Image (cartoon, rainbow, N blue to C red; front, top):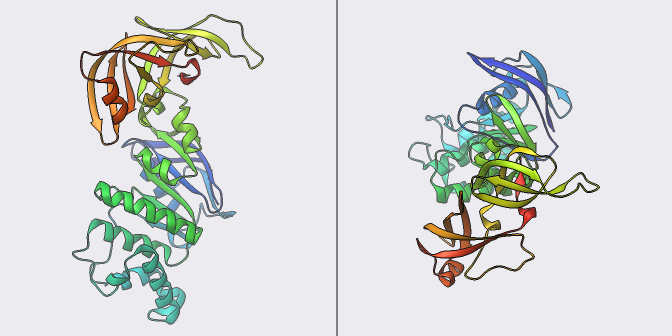
Length: 355
């Protein structure tokens, strides 16, 4: 595992404050956040390239906080790759093994071939790195980091420099590689899709702090703030007021009304007052006729804009506050969705997450 206990780091005028996070042995965790939130600084601190003002870094039960980078047994891949231009692909991968097994030894050659096979770059082993595509360079950099069998693999925006199609392929290959090697992995990224597709756990950073952590699907579905909701792409984040309409149950939750301008929604809440309503676009139901009474929120709305995104259609609706719904292309066609069309919107009270 890798554990961060109350890390504090200062780089220039920027501070990381009280960073605590743990990745279990063999786990795959991601640190996500916008540009400038401190993700790469945190990775540098773990790797030993940024000094700690406070706290500890533990890797597999060993406190490595005071060790130089080369003694921490951590593999790291930066987004610039940093491949050695004067070495072949095979020599780049073998570079970290030169002291462990002896350059040119059978053990080194076996390890290089095994990693190249997992990453689909066996045919490139004799080539120089100049002229490789971004995806090929990324595979070489990952193989080089894994070759010495580090206790933890650190990845800094590993897909930042590749096109969307290559990104999809690399995500899949990285997950297969992670399962094959069983290595504890910590990746930083600004793309929440990486967390949903790769991670067992995720931490969201903002301005040098971790503001939420947990399973990716939980953070995605139940963000703890408007900032997290917007960052992970929740879709609809509406500011308003919660007013109680029922008595609390055994769990302390009660029926309430959420009011934002002329928009009123039936919701389930645990407190009154100012709040943000977080609504997933796919939880908004659209119909050409009024929806059944079992759906508490039934509102007639006007379609403002329709955007086709492959198999999904995003529909912007005027509902007192602009809301965005996500439907299939078949549903959009059946309802004849286009600007100016009036439809019924349905939303279960339990589908509104309040923060």
